Amino acid sequence: MEKRQYTHWTPEKLMAVAKEYKTTNDFHVGNPAAYMAAKRKGLFKAVTAHMFQGRFFWTKEMIQKEADRFKTRSDFARDAKAAYSAASRMKILDEVCSHMPKYSGKGKKRGPNARGKAKKTEAKPAKSMAEMMGLSK
Image (tube, rainbow, N blue to C red):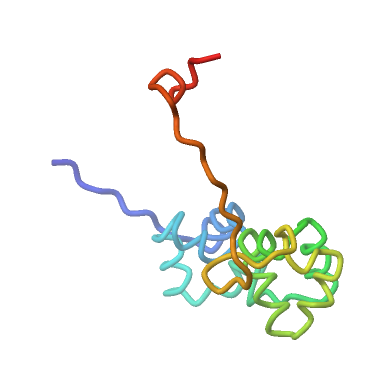
């Protein structure tokens, strides 16, 4: 069995490895040994200074730009969940969805609670098996 060689993490090596990553999570997943070495040596803040820090906050303009990509509210809600929930939380959903139709149906309510009766069509009974299969002229 070979003896494993351990890397001696200098501040320069840590900086070089960390430059390959854009977020601290990518750094942690991509090279956990370097990540932990930076933590242990107290160099973590210096090594990760170039990386994205903190949370992402939606602004009204960003939400509007995202909503403009969609034709319906359901598409917006399904494909841009974060923007949709931020708009809902900020109570600007109606405003950013003003270019979308209120509903995407044909204007009639459907389902068991719909008012009105469905039109029943009377089907003529087939006279023969060929007629039923659509083979007759």
